[in-house]
Amino acid sequence: MDFPPPQSPAQQGQGRSLPANPNVAIVGATGAVGVELLATLAARGFPAASLRLLASERSAGQRMPFAGRELTVEALGPDSFAGVDLALFSAGASVSRRFAPEAVAAGAIVVDNSSAFRMAPDVPLVVPEVNAGAIADHTGIVANPNCVAIIMTVALAPLHRAQPILRIQAATYQAASGAGAAAMAELRDATEAALEGRAYEPRVMRHPYAFNLFSHDAAVDTETLHNGEELKVMAETRRILAAQMPIGVTCIRVPVLRAHAIALCVAFAEPMPPERARALLGAAEGVRVVDDAAANHFPMPNEAQGQGLVLAGRIRQDFSDPSGRTVSLFVAGDQLLKGAALNAVQIAERLLGN
Image (cartoon, rainbow, N blue to C red):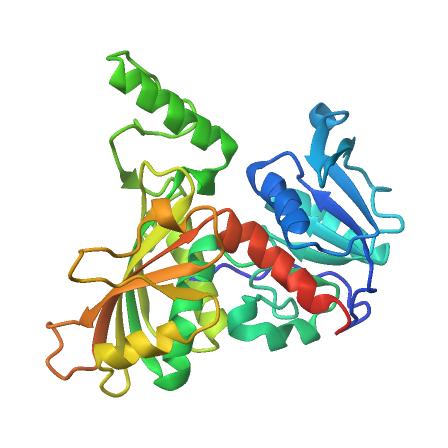
């Protein structure tokens, strides 16, 4: 079951690029991804002529550090996008549906981190290492994919280019950061309480989070029995890879702060020796192979967090398929960086001078 595409904004300035020094706005600047967007723009030296931080009324007036100075958060409103060339949205689908078309109408290009426009046919869904060319088809909005779909396709795309993928089976191990700053705080508080032997009543998650794991907190579709996260990952992965292969996904929330991991079993049209898969991944943009069998050292969230590469390892033949066409591997990536903020900024960089 795929989600129906939302209504797309009016087509304005198809394929237009950003000026060399754009005026930038961040919508949802005080959230977990907003904070990372701010840090990523600074770390990569993005050439913003000005930077406007936008959030809810309750966050207005808050001051946030950026590149050695402090910026004041403004309340998001209909007139927030006057003079803005680039609007980076990370405030949820309802905010994006309301304000992204207004930003486009005011002359901005929107890079949206929510699910609002990901399946709209005239809104590109982009992972720059995978399908950067799709950015040229934008009509004012470019969608940032789901964090799992980003991390997964960075690793799968170089394999798929070399040998078409016929089927994907995935199990995800998703960090608290995917549910926002409040979930990260709850994991810290719940863990502290558990270590001290104190009772802790969950407030953000439905289940105890410390020393526990549970099915992803997205609502379960009563028809398919898949949760919303699983449905998103399946639909978006197909769209990013431009292929309609069968995909099965089980999404699990684990007590990790900010890096997702994914176990993958991938069937190809022809045999894919593990050595070839390892070489392809080792040469791929955005991937670092961590595959030291002798030391039992493979991708881990604590090594993935804080950097922008997707770690790939545990690359081996799946013995359940004697034809040699199926490979198993394990990947990990920082959900707040490559899974969200960094991917959005990379899209913005591609829009400069296109």
